[in-house]
Length: 252
Ligand code: OAD
Image (cartoon, rainbow, N blue to C red):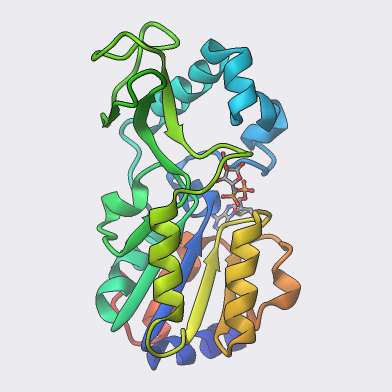
């Protein structure tokens, strides 16, 4: 990352009234959480369609649950890192702020983020396929897979948005309202995501076309990098606190 890029992004952030942030798995990498497409990513060892699609779940629910149970187990005791803390601090210091995350690990919320929309659900939430009972049980691991509903005995599924499924309407409506209400977004930060999923690109490029500064934070090039106004190459846990400090904001 060059100092010039950091200074440019910080100047924009310093005076910003409306800030929109999109995060992906990379923001949790420095907490020790595996990403999906990186060198040690989930999709290097498993096929996404086997583990994160309704068809994969219908074929082998126990296999899908083994993967989710294992991801749950690895998340117990994991703490937010300086990137999560910096975004929670940023939320408290700008007039209008919204964070849209693709992550299901709850680390943004653990760091104190409240103006947040979770696009893909919560890894600690389940939904019964029979009676639709939904519950969120942090740190819960299951002995019998697939687990059964305590209400009706039906099969539980992870309450996660899988490939081929619609995004939940509520967060989308909140995000669309934020993006179109009042004054335009001044700066959009895209942090730790390959930005392969369509709506991430739509929001980011739409905001840039509407006049927002599009800034990306990522140690690697993504589909968005060539279209961003500013790219801050590097790990989010280092760059985000630096960016806030440079903008005269408290980083945590
Ligand atoms: P990916 O695994 O596709 O991308 C992670 C991104 O984080 C990559 O661009 C990395 O370069 C970057 N990265 C790695 N370490 C970083 C760090 N320390 N700081 C900043 N960036 C870092 O994850 P997502 O883009 O979140 O969906 O993937 C989007 C969705 O696809 C996920 O929600 C998941 C996945 O399949 C479902 O499971 C439905």
